[in-house]
Image 1: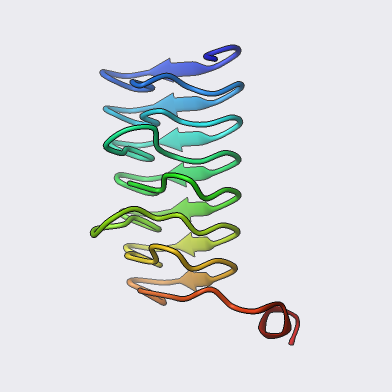
Image 2 (image 1 turned 60 degrees about the vertical axis):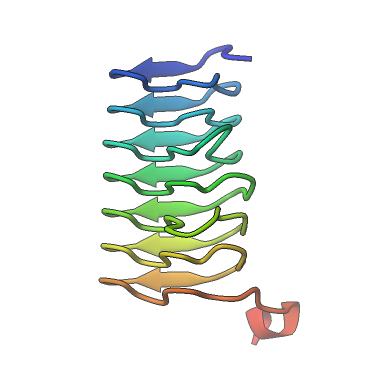
Length: 130
């Protein structure tokens, strides 16, 4: 829809951007969905519509290939990036270099620190509340 979307940088926001999305940096926010923010070289980049709705990707390659998940936060170089396949989980928080990298389908995970909690699974509601 590209309404109220902002793209700054070479190829930022390519593939279209959702309502209120922001992309800043080379290839940042490729196909960013509604209310997503991608700041940094390749942040939120993907091979097609990428960076699901309500996501925050700050740092080079943060949230890369995070395609259909929502409400994820990625801060740091390669945080919550999918080196293999695509990341489709939701409600994840990754802070630090490569935190939650290759967490391709897990949801409700938190990784803080260098390479913290890589390759995670979804947790049940009981595991989240306990």
